[in-house]
Image (tube, rainbow, N blue to C red; front, side):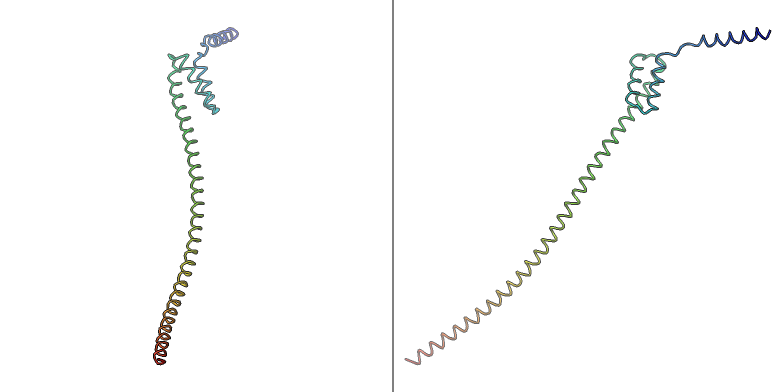
Length: 160
């Protein structure tokens, strides 16, 4: 009897295995798409999800494929935005460094110009002092000349 029991068990197991339906093509594509996501091959996974929606729109897998596709699309859009924003930040940082360098150059130029202005102010003050000295000397010489003219006129009058 044990032989018959063993035969019955084997036949039952073989019958169960033979009666399992083969996997649906849409399920196979969904498994492949999920595997591609796990491998971070997002573009290929997106194509596989699109394939399910195009070829098998009425299957149970289509709803999950749609959700996965939308989520993956959002992920890829977010990554693209991160890349774009990172590039913008780097460009702005480079621009800021350039502007800082320009500011330092302008500050150095301003210091040079301030030093030149101080030197010019000092030269102007010396020139004004010299003008004042020369004006005073010219006034003194004019006065001396007037005195000499008076003396000369007085001497001329006395001679006459």
